[in-house]
Image 1 (cartoon, rainbow, N blue to C red):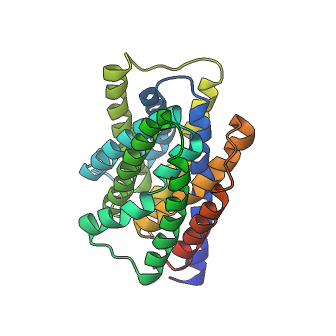
Image 2: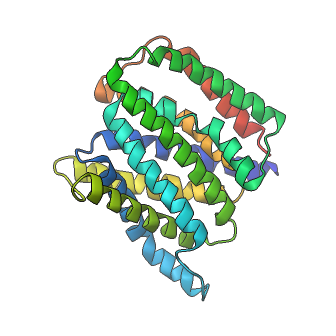
Length: 288
């Protein structure tokens, strides 16, 4: 990897982290059920990207929009968004972001099983640092009331689903145009969540007040911006590098939740956050 290409990857990674970190905050402002939030997020992204997708398809005659890879990745993305939104609604932002942040620990195992990717020794050190930080924070957050346990458990499940989505994205994205693949993924994810909304929530809701604006923000920032850039980055790096942005999102969203929702972290937050950020920096710097 050349210095220029590494610098490009780092810049894209930082942009992904910032855009994706807005998801938890915007989700909290949505006053509708979880599957409806997730549906509008990916449906809106698919609508915005569709004209560009169709234009790209003209240059690639015979290319299918809904490929096996896009459908598989889309199913896991849809399940991830629905469970992630639910966890945000049933626990604190810091708690949900912490447990979604275990993706760097999960992705290598999924990647090894699906694509035979391996970690280098520096990435093992980076994972160890991130793990230490999460264990530190987990110990403190386990002292929260029982009302947070359901949200915590679903956030952990969502982390597994999201890590699988990233690994599948890398496996199938490399041979496809980014727009064609992304739109196929979003259409599938929208269908999954539309089904979930109809079965479990009595239909797809749109809400009122701040909700439509928050939904628009979710479509443009973390989805069209963050997830589409993540699919682009997966063409150049291993999925572990992309999911290393998740712990940094945890730090950013937890800090943002202080002035917005009055969810100030305790003193135990800071040592854990320092370990996580150290792991993130090392993982990016030493990635192959």
